[in-house]
Image (cartoon, rainbow, N blue to C red; front, side):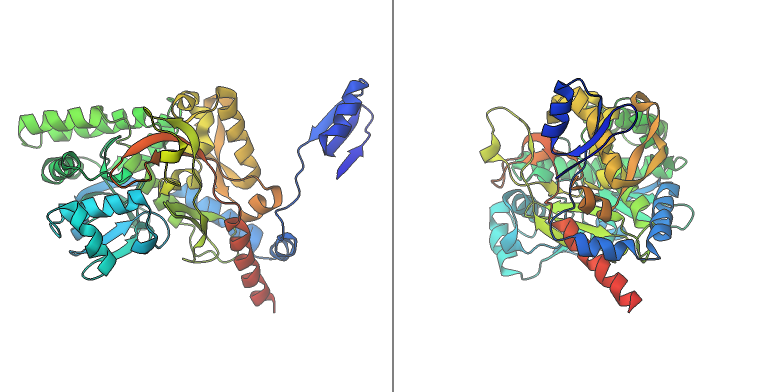
Length: 468
């Protein structure tokens, strides 16, 4: 279907491009409008939600609440203390998941975590433990105000970043970043993985705890704003953010009284891991988005998360309900001899960054990211502009210099996604599909399209119930 309108200075055309192309060939000035029909089967629900008298104000309040949050780093402590995790309890990324449906990297991460907690001597023995379901339990990180990158597995002895909003005392949590390659979050569980995790629990966590408790709270939201102007997009590129975090914590580490060799090792570990700040950026984004939860009538997405099998979203107006579909395999660049057949479907809570308006939504701030995830510099700029079509606001705290300091597109609107067919763009790492493999690449991915009509249907049902 195509429509045309003839103004005084030319033709405006939307729809099938053949008509605009024909006019171009005849030297007729044409203004092209990128029009797309709504997603199939959403017309009635879109019409219902459009009539909801709560929607406009609810979305305004949701976006404002999210953007008003200041995320402060206030502590680093074991998950057993801050999350109440007990022996045999494990958190994971994404929507709820049963062991029998877990992907290779999720299984690998859980097996490694079981060995870390001394539930088994050999990670391989953990398969039978999880299959039996005895003395172990699985729960999404999001259900405990936490987030985890990739497999996102958290066990009681792992140390967590603790972030707090000083206005209301709400807190969110995330584990410490291990680095890239063969690491637990990518499903690896070899001896070197467990040795690193034990060092993180014995040395890194306690030293970070001393540094955080021995200094003024670090403003993670402020660091995010600065790093976006320094070439990071805060999902797959966190180099500037990591260095700024080190700058803020280094004096307290040096003055902590800890062994000098341990301090040097921690500096080496953090400085050699450009992704270290990711595990601060994620809970900062969750803390902001959780401020919008429970606003009746809001169509704003407050979580996007993947468990390696399913991709799920939650919205401000539908409580804790998950809307899920099959996770997709990213399109990107592979390490070494790996290829598409080696990659697991998308996994991790790290899409919380895109949900908040950074990561893939802020690719224009980090054109160098295309060398890691694929695409081109013009693609990066176009992606950020395109995300404006499906969001409620621009976040002035996170301006984009190359786009004349436009704020990042923020607040994904389910109705706009269903009306335009434009899907959120996510930058992601890729885990090997076989447990124990580790990282195989990085790339770009979008959610399965069907989850947005599912969320829209639930929002429409609530609207009809209120109107009846």
